[in-house]
Amino acid sequence: MGFASKELLINVLFVLLPLFFVQMFYLVKYTHQSKRLKNWMVAIFPVISLVLCMLFPAPLMDGFVMDFRRIPLVLGVLYGGPWFGLLLLALILVIRFFQGGDGFVITSIMYPLFTVILIYLSKSYHMMSVKKRLLVVGLVLPASEAALLFIITQLCPIKIPGMIQLQLILLNMTAVFVAMVIWEIIRQNFELMQKVAKAEKLEVVSHLAASMSHEVRNPLTVTKGFMQLLYEDLPKDKQKDYLDLAIRELDRSVEIINDYLMFARPSVEKMEKIDMRLETQNSLNIMTPHANMHGITIVSVIPPAPIYVMGKTSQFEQCLVNMIKNAIEAMPDGGEIQVTIQSDRSTVSLMIEDSGEGMTIEQINRLGEPYFTTKSKGTGLGMMVSYSIIQGMNGEITVKSVKGKGSCFTITLPVYYERENS
Image 1 (cartoon, rainbow, N blue to C red):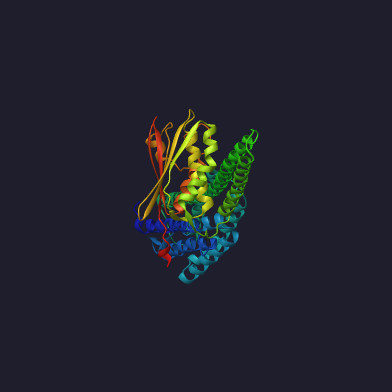
Image 2 (tube, rainbow, N blue to C red; image 1 turned 60 degrees about the vertical axis):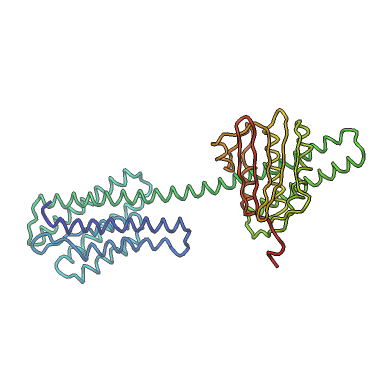
């Protein structure tokens, strides 16, 4: 192309560059959920594109200049609606009036007519497929360009060679095709982003419901076990102990439901001082009958002196019950679970060691992920909740395991001292 190629390519840049700013606008709006960014602000970009195209046209011949103002007008009417199209038309007429020259008369005739055609097409434009949209614009824009060139050559004392006219039409077609493809990609990307965000919200709700069902089942299973034991001929005091433990487990299931309601409606969680030694023993008392039913012995090594950590008692107990239950289920043929508490001045470690099936490195790395489980039945949500609880207590869970020999889960938490708050 031998005529004013530099200036026309700059006009193409004026058309395309604002589209990338539109993408950045939507990316910031939806990624950061910014309420300050309003949808109407997108209209600024085609306005800027149109103004720049008209202020920096490409000189063609004998004082005749050319620009790509029709492309922002096309996109503005078809994607922004009739009222936005009329705004762009008014802007074109105002700028062209102040630029002066005979071209204003041609502009004031051609562009209102062109805008009316675009407004008519916009009524059914959004119901068309992308291919039909490209086809419609690919026919309308070259036709308008050809009509404009014909009128100019008829009314003005200027002769534009046919080859240059063809090049102008092809360049307009190429620029509008590229602009429309970019716009469609941007639009589809952000529609997809909204769908993904909606799907993620539904997935969170699904995880929450499944996790709550899983966690409530644990205390109900233990309660069922105690109730079954009451069928046996037991001393009155033993029956009372079992009933007390069953009621306590039902209370714990209510607490779990309340906890998940709080997850659904987040609030500031108050931390409390927990005697780790006492809560570990309570969890063992709950799980020992369940372990005995599966031919499993629980051996504990717990120091006599209190060891305090910060957390929430019900959640910490829920975590321990989950992990001990997993250890029981890892030994279908029976065995032994060893629970040990060790502490130094700054941290305390609780180790739950089983002689079960063990895990591979890949399985260990995926522990705590939603719906990952090493069992044939289960969701993996119990372990996910356990990891979440310990992280909320500023602790961590580490795992050592050998396939076929067993696993050792170590919960490490910072020790709480009264004098830290004095």
